[in-house]
Image 1 (cartoon, helix red, strand yellow):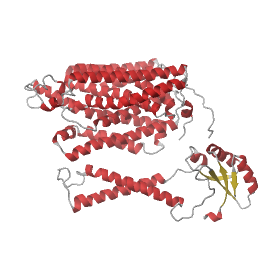
Image 2 (tube, rainbow over the protein chains, first blue to last red; image 1 turned 180 degrees about the horizontal axis):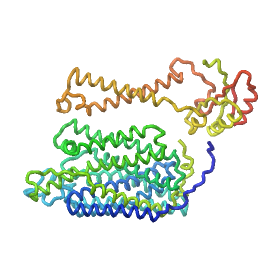
Image 3 (cartoon, rainbow over the protein chains, first blue to last red; image 1 turned 45 degrees about the vertical axis):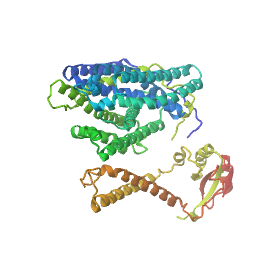
Image 4 (cartoon, rainbow over the protein chains, first blue to last red; image 1 turned 135 degrees about the vertical axis):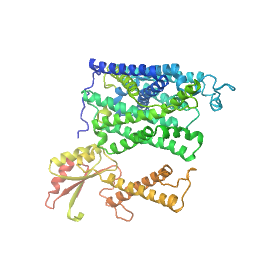
Length: 419
Length: 175
């Protein structure tokens, strides 16, 4: 094993975004649009839930990729220098996800969030809800909008800043721009901790407005982070299969595989903590959340637990499994599906309940406020659309810069990474 | 085979890169490099020495399963069989229905047994138990030096081995 051998960087060119790949991504986006429009025509409220859920995953992948990138800077990580560009490219999807999110909530907010209904906090109103009124200091539309616009502004600013400095480093002095990014990354991580927590309450937890869980922000973060790592593995596998990024060896894969394995266990830990404390205490206003999921979404609810815990635990446990490119890719798909189901279980039961409330108020179902979500062609189509959009954006940004940041000060360490 | 039947000589190095590169060099010159004793883990050393993968992970699994079974058995006896407990206001008294409450204890017991089992196995296997006379080849081998163990036969020319080992970068030689 030659330890001072020189390793030639071959990925000096940007990724070539071929016509065929543009077509595939475009067709997927069109399938998504068709699914959204046709579902909107028949099941108005379910479409908004569906859009929120898919866009939340889409946003989470981009946001956590940026989080991962920031961690690499702050912790001065060497091994990951060769995968920096794919991570960066994933983060670039964040502004688009932000715009879509704002549009979804602007037009469908009242179908998703029970607490957004007019008059719900006005004493004496027909739909007055004293619990929501008690939370209105935080959960009111004006403050909600200020928060989410501020979050997307902060995130977009950092995503663009990291990218700008990274691209400048290709031309100039790598150390100077790396240090600039490290400083920015430290600020980003502090802001991320705050914004991610509040964002998870705003977008997801407030759907079940009466219910709350102090663990929710962590739990949401863990889910988003593994989805992001899974998307990263998929991207790297694809790039390697096309002859790019030959610098990424099984040693790098082993490290990314460890992230996927470890965060799957971490997600399970949080899932179980949240469940067990609520199950044990058995307080009515807390258990409603799980009662709804247990009684009406049992297969999905338990299925997500098994897919996201047992599958990675058993399959990714051994050292060899984490070093095999195609096994990792296969697992990244399994984990994506698992977390899609998890997000489904987080969003749909609550938002369909909101839909039920509206239907009951409109007099459509007298005395029956329970309406249930399901998974059909429309849901899958919408997800395909979002995957197509993500694929398009990632490939677009990969094609804008060389696949290896050649002036990265820790690149040499990364090329020689061996574990 | 006891250690007395095998004869070893030792090359002492003061750099991890040098010792790592010396393994291949000396083996190509016909020496039987058996092991390298290092104060810290050297990346790629196992691969270079051609050592088989450690079986401690299999031990860990078995110890973990033992801990898991013991914990479940203990809880079953205590909280279901001997003194049925009403857990969380849900008087089901069924083991599988109360399982969520037992998971933390089971997890801790699994970790406890796996970790202690691994450490004890390692100590036994490495013969570094309290009271055992330590086999110190070089006083600095647990500080900043690296000891390479080379197996020789009774009729091997030790001076030739010494010159080869020193040429490969050893700072000292011990036979």
